[in-house]
Length: 618
Image (cartoon, rainbow, N blue to C red; front, side, top):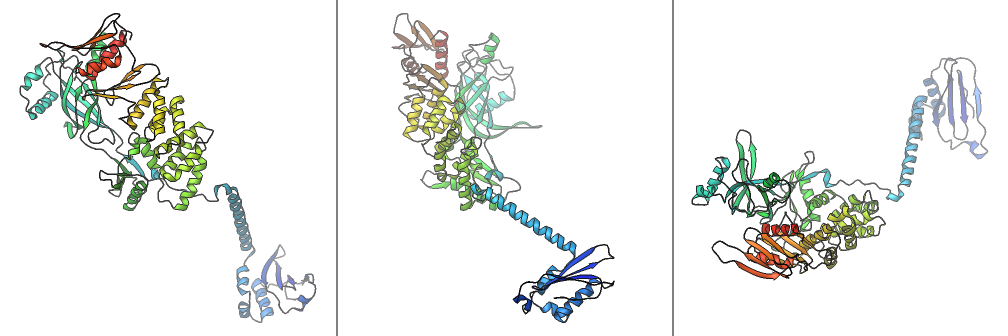
């Protein structure tokens, strides 16, 4: 098929599809080609035979006809009129493909880029086949909130110590003296001035630290100190009368202001007994002391969740509370199931501690931060599969275990799988999370960690203390036979938290003065006393005996006397104007402590007795 048009141009026509190409010379400098139209010629006779080659027709001469003229002539030739061109099939294709060379090149380049992107995305998808082809980022609660109320509150008060046997003194005029006198007037104490002036009494400053998540009636430690420039010289043998403890705040220009009354304190004061250091150091140590478990809380403290400023809203607050309560709930005194988290404001959520974490609230907070926010079921399944792989990586095991623990029972199978790992840290992290989920599958791992891994020991013992299972009790009893003294006492504390009335502990209570525990352990004999939490004596090995002869003091009124070659000792209580009370017992340490307790010895008296026995090579 050939067409001849006027002007300098090159025309090519494909007879099969009637593709018309028109080219023009611009002042002879270059050749431009424009793709005008591609229309099928359904009636062409040439379709019946072989496709002929392209025919090129070149016309000579110059013409000033512009490109629009050529387009008009071409459309007239094919369809009869320009308007007819737009009504023909394929007109839309003609409009889309009409443009300059630059536009066509840009379109080709864009199409190439899109193909490259699709190819790249396809390759990436093929590379991520092991990751299910889906990467869903689930926000954690840590991105929305923080936990408050996990700090201590300092409490202070002014109290009176009695029973000092001449080491007290009359306090000088001061705000502390005035405060103590006002307290005595409130209690209708007669002869307050004479009491303060007695050499057997002393004014003291009482300090205590109210712990986080404390419950009403819970006990905590107290520190007692003689104020500077006081006449009193020692608190040894002293007893702090009941003292109210308040929260205090120092206000500029107004001094210390009292807040709420949070606790009551009192009890026998345990000093350092002045057995080490120079005489000045020993004397200084006698001017302060502690009362283990000497304060009783009169309030409760809960944690609270505070939303970040950019995240706060009533909707988010309610959703976060629901997410926490879906995982953590507890029971009230009537057996009703209640949530641990309750939304209070758009940025505040009240949070109760779950009983499983009562002795490890830092982990409780970590688990809450690892709870997913507004997660779909599909997203959770994908995340769990990812966590199942990550927990096998020692570098990611801790974070993955916390997230699986935050998921709850659904995460237990994956944590159990991690117990088969060759890496001990992976196994330990999984066993620890299983313990807080109430599953005893990792007891053997925790037992091994407490026995052989000092870095994991304390965490393993705390985890074992929350598993209410016979295997846990047996494992803790075995650890009390360990060669490590730290492990033995740690196992005792864990078992006491798990079951305070366990017969293995053999608790003997001497009023509210102290507790005595006797552990039948075949290991090295040991006697443990503590300055924190509770006045208790733990004896590992009930057959420990004192070497005789010996003369020991348990306070100012009780003596222990044993003669050479004897197998028994006398425990004697001396009181002014009264006949001495005497008990004859064996030289076993347990029997001597029991006898002293029955005669009224306090916890500081027992500590003094044991220290003196050690100094006499027992």
